[in-house]
Length: 133
Image (cartoon, rainbow, N blue to C red; front, side, top):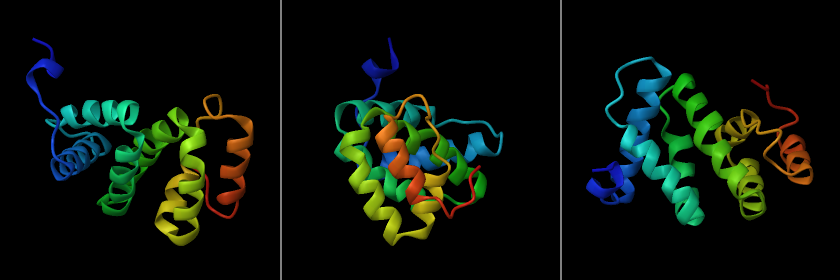
């Protein structure tokens, strides 16, 4: 049986907690028992970008340390922006202008070849004062 056949969609809180545990384990090179959350968030990004956006803000806010935040930024946040650049850019800009931690997270998003040039330019302007990783 495949993972998708066995696992049903988690609640918002279960997915959030599972992904944070996954990100922390990967960021600190520990055993990861929550890879299911990585897969589930990827499915949510594909099927429900608005739902993924809700999770994303919480992931950035609740990442426990710089390494975990870096994993979230360069992974899930970057993927969401790359997969749905037109739908996400206004939200990203708005949140980053109000939230310094989120702006820092956006500075770690690269995706040079996966984001349209005009959206990449907006992101670059948004984080021009941030340290780039």
